[in-house]
Length: 373
Image (cartoon, rainbow, N blue to C red):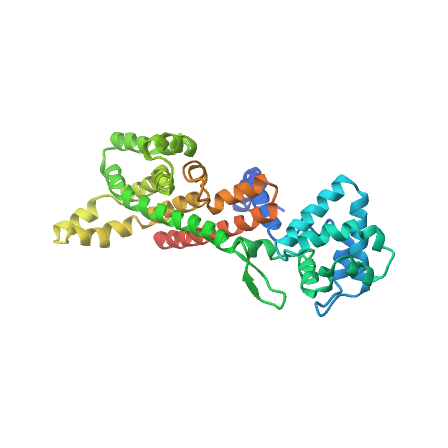
């Protein structure tokens, strides 16, 4: 049975594109997917208390859990104590994670671990006496959440919220700081996009209307700030603007300006000058020509430029770290969390940073379809 030539050509094209698809999956999709997976995974408590995790799956959250949960907690903690230094480190990590939800557990978990050898052979009341904190249902609820999957803890912490024992949410101690970081990131990206759009329009008009040789020179010159790299731009502007949020914003906006100029210039150049000139000849004012002719002509380039600038500005942190170290953004907090091995926090921040990028991509696709129609 022979294959249709069109189908055979499509099959060959798919086979040729397969290495590129695999490269994208391995280099982009897999790392991002793993990071997002970490945002709903509990890596501090669940691995340290596996028996307790299984026991708490049977608890309905009403009152105190049964004796089995108390005994398995003591057994897990005794096993960690017997493991030496690695076990002590696991207890410390678990206590730190639980303390973010219930502060009293910062001392209760290590304290119970120290007395676990004495209580492991006793019934639940002995473990309860080991630390009164285990007599509160709210602390067991926090422990149950910390060993569950999927977990919303890191996602809520990224926006400054946490679960309440009686249900619903409340502000966490780090709530204002967490939301301020996200707000600075999103607000800075929006302002940078707007600033780039305003500054890019006259330069894009100049490039679009220039002769081919001059247009190529202008486009190459426009790319220079981008090619220099963010770290070099920040260090270069430091003696001129000093340190501060205004300096960081200026460096960010000016560095990303080429990403707005070139798409807009390309859209205007492809549209050509005939229609705007004809409209001006017919008596339209410059504002009417801009609003009715040039702006619709450049719509695709504007959409692409806004998408590029916004997503790049949202993830930028070198300039902020160098010029405004006391006002960290969400991206710099993500980098700090990743350096510290706090992958749940890093994954949650990455999830919130990717949401606007996906929204921008959807808007860009919509504009592209309109332009094609």
